Length: 320
Image (cartoon, rainbow, N blue to C red):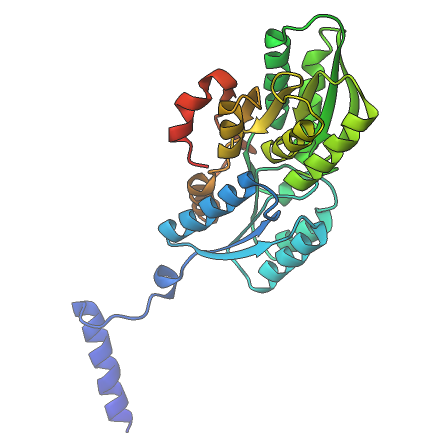
């Protein structure tokens, strides 16, 4: 028996040296696993963002564990804890709001699972809890909207602006408002007379705009934090017997196809681009994070601004 074992061991050693026997390589065969907690499906933008992430993961050969939080922070926290329990390689999420993440991210750090933020940022005193943030500069988007308005508004006298905010406490709502107000304060004629959340949804945008119109007989401009709310607001403006894009100038953010259709119909004046197609870039970052490569703390996407006059030309090339 001892002799036969020695002969078997010798055969294996000879085979390894000759290259004829292969031992299993678990590390080489193991797929990179990425757990992603999405905000929800509240808008055209978010739907395009999700599709981009799912298709890019498939193309990159990454095993994607996907969770839809339905715009609730507690659901995202639950999803992140599930990813930690599953021992995924990297965790990513688009934070519903900016605060309240430290506890769960400390759990991820303790489990030695790196975290990547997409689309939105968080507020934390410990920035070692995440590797990087990929997405748009929301403050700059607000500034672009403000600059367009100052440069293109043709009316005289005071300019009464109503604002449809995004989800309360979310980075885009906070930062788009900040950038917009920063720019329009240069001209005292421009005043935001009412501001309320429309939660980034078309239905809520319509509902809030209806309330604005009942409360304020003289609205000159609507600044909407996303196109879906603006499209809902257009319905409310028309129902009130006014002409969107003419009686009320509409300035929005996102650059989704629905906004281009509204601009081609003369019902929206401008949209500031916020690119949702982050999937390919995100998967590349996930691979770099797993490989331990250094990354900047912030990676911004490049974006433009599209006034009504350019809508027909740009529409055929829009991917979302």
